[in-house]
Amino acid sequence: MRDQTRGAPPPPLEQAAFEAARANVAPAMKQGSAAVLDAVLATWADADRLFDKLRANPAYVLGAPPAACRRGCGWCCHQKVGAAAAEVLAMSRALAERPTEARMLQSWKKGQPCAFLKDGACAVYDIRPLKCRSLWHVDVRHCMAKYAGLPVSGAKTDPSFRHEPKIIYEGALKGLALPLIKQGHDCPGLELMPALKAVMDNPDAASQWWMGKSPFPAETVLDWFPKPAKKKR
Image 1 (cartoon, rainbow, N blue to C red):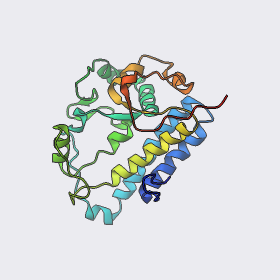
Image 2: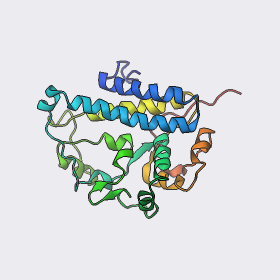
Image 3: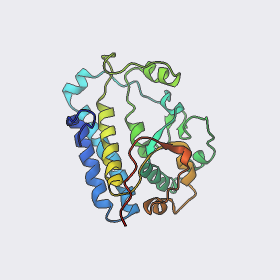
Image 4: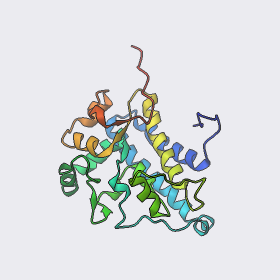
């Protein structure tokens, strides 16, 4: 994987996350949609392990302020959340075995915070998508400003900003989606809540997606990745 804008290789952390995700997805594609959804779970776990390994490094810990993310915050949960199509389907499959959380989603309406925000915490923390996992900030004012639509600081203007989590989870996201797209399986970014709600009661959603028929409403699609090339007949 290379930086398409400059032709330079990506940061090592991003490359490691990308390769781990691709190693999960590539063999799974030969087995079908169920195996791909299993690969999503493995990709979440691998990206978390990579970040946990980084955080166990004394040099990183000593140079990184503690995260502001904690129970009772939830500013990010009041904004639109994105996830790759394969992640949405993996979450839907998991929620089929979690009726309490599934009911939380069923009652969600457009304009509300994330359906899974409960008592100031995420009720589906273990199956949250990569974009959610990448939100790791040391100053809650960053999240508050973004929620309010105000300018936010970045790595170049805020010395306390930590970009490593974003690099890791963005790398995993690309490693998950791009191999699928290369093989002709559309894996767009989706607005999580409406996309997930649309497929929750559709047991055939994953197989439909795998066969090239999107089960997601068109208005949920986010312009993250290129469309797959049409296969020659």
